[in-house]
Structure formats: structure tokens, C-alpha cells
Picture (cartoon, one colour):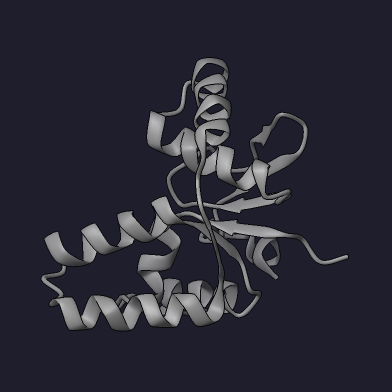
Length: 141
């Protein structure tokens, strides 16, 4: 059975980066039709504008790619309530907790993120995997 996966914004950003190895891994993950949240799209857009100096047209192109390769889900009040519980229990930042809550609400069993705790299992249902960890290439296939 193939995992139902969710991608954090940092993974998506590598798909549009010049870092060859991480770019290829991120692009491979995008081929698996992952789930993203609107929050993820907002975070990606913000970084593209602020740190990579993308113009509006370029950000629109990235969003078009993401619309075609992923399922984009809304967050709701229930997502926020779950996120607050995750923040309290696991001590993640509020925005990371929202990403985790979105993944859980959408029945994902794997969340790919570079900056959360690798191999941590949240609520006995969601495993966080850093696909860039050396020796863990099998983790994203």
C-alpha cells in the first residue's frame, strides 16, 4: 500500500531550487500526488517573494504547477483546534502544528519535512520523515 503523503513548504521550495540532489528528491515526491494545505501555498509564496525575489508571474507559475501535481486542502477551525493540541503535546511551533494537523485531518500517514523531528510519530498515525537524511533514501520511495 502506498503512503498517503503531505508535504511541508520546505520540501516544495527545494523542487524550485538549484540544489540538485534535494531538488530531485522533492520533484520525486511531487510525482506522488501529495496533499498540501493552503497554508503551505502561502508559506511557499511568501518565501519565493521575500527570499528568492520571484515576481508575481513566477509565483503564479509555481502555484499552477502545484495545482496540477498536488491536492490542495483548506484549513478550518477544527484544524486550528487540532493544531493547538499538537502544539501543547509535542511542542512544535504553531505553524508547524497547523501543518501536522492538516496532514492528520486529511488522513495522511507520512509528512515530509526537513525541519521537524525525523521519524517522530504523531498521535500514533502520522510519521514525520526528512527525505534528505543520509542513508534514508528508501524513506521517500
